[in-house]
Amino acid sequence: MKNLFKFIILSVLITVVLISGSGILTAEKEKSRESGWVSLFDGKTLKGWGNPYTWGEAKVVDNEIHLSAEKKFFLCTEKQYADFIFEAEIRLPDEKGKCNSGIMFRCHKKKNKVTGYQAEVDNTEREWSGGLYDEGRRKWFINPIKKDDANVEAFLKKARGVYKQNEWNKYRIHCEGEKIKIYVNGVLTTDVSDGMDSQGYIAIQHHGEKGGNMYRFRNIRIKEIKEADQGKPPKENFKWKKSKKK
Image (cartoon, rainbow, N blue to C red):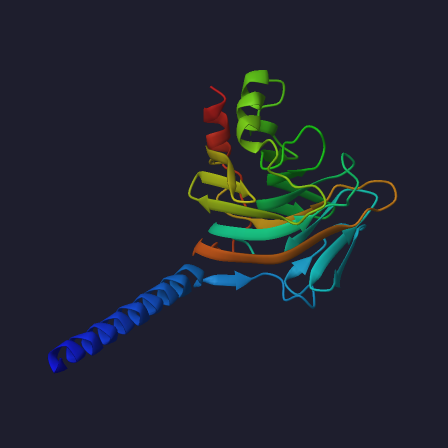
């Protein structure tokens, strides 16, 4: 009986140790997964951001960035980024089909102009949220390709319905070398290679409509994989552009 009792006690102790160890490993795995993330928005100020336009309003309300304007503008980071994983949540006005936004990355900026890669945010019937647009340059050049019905339909098989109207929508952008991936609410909508830009700024967009609708952003963060050279401005790879046209 004593031996049986000792066996039961030993079994209980081993089980407790295994469960505790498993919990520690899970916690460590979660800590490792979350390490390296840096918030780009402190929830109180617009520190680290700037508006290169002479119009458009950006303000902080309840841990959110609110953009309003009647003309398109972008609120841009002051820092450049090269290879990274970026996440943010966006909520467009509740009225469906009237608004359009985007998250720029590795982009270029100057007074009253921002150009470059844009992860599309689209609450219209078109449903192109998660597409890759080239603002001010090649436009819908790759995913989807405008006026290419087969390409658009292939894109919509992945992206149709991923944007949730009247809800917060989570975007994830992963850039590493020429590889670009865009996720909307956990769904991979864009997975392409493009070598036009290797570093640049990040920006959030207000598309501009009469009445100055409010666009809202929150939980903006980034995990850098390769740091950008802050001493160099973003530079387009024109050699790549020329070779791809052949």
